[in-house]
Amino acid sequence: MKKPCQILILIFVFIGSFSFSVAAQKDSSTTIILVRHAEKDTTAAGSTQMQADPPLSAQGKIRADHLVSVLKSYPIQSIFSTKYNRTRSTAMPIAAKLGVEIQTYDPSKQADLALLLKSWKGKTILVVGHSNTVPGLVNLLTGSSTYPNLGDNEYDKLYIVRLENGKSTHEQISY
Image (cartoon, rainbow, N blue to C red; front, top):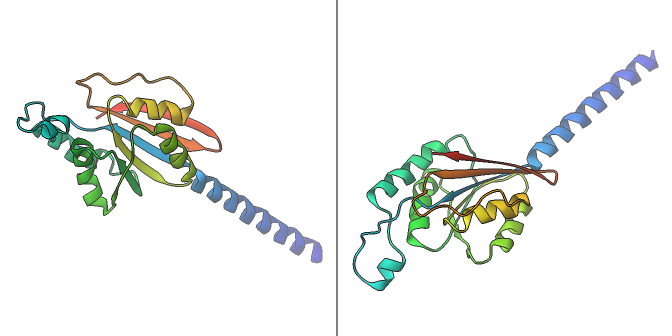
């Protein structure tokens, strides 16, 4: 009588261990969503500061709002943006919707940001950057040189990088 009972216990222990292992693997995957800021207002007149750090155009504001619906299925827990008006304004609608504070990063320290993002196991993170930083950060995260800088008028690209068990997958979509 003991043998069937012991076998049953072993089966339950095995199933429990397997389930815990699968859950641990799922928790260790990291999803990083990267996007260039939305369209900037290139007609903004005024001070030199305004020209160096323009706001979003009307189209850019629409795109920033649209980003909320595009990313609605992702459980974003952290949002990173450069200090510039156009990147912060792109991130604001989704940050407000999710109640997540926007953290500022230095775009000249891409390698540091990549290391930080890779260390956040089990998280979903949004990074808003620039035409010359977002593709480079995707390349750093994936160990590839797949993506060139974006053109001056390319605002519709979104990159999704998934990191799990030392491997990465990535895709580029238009929104």
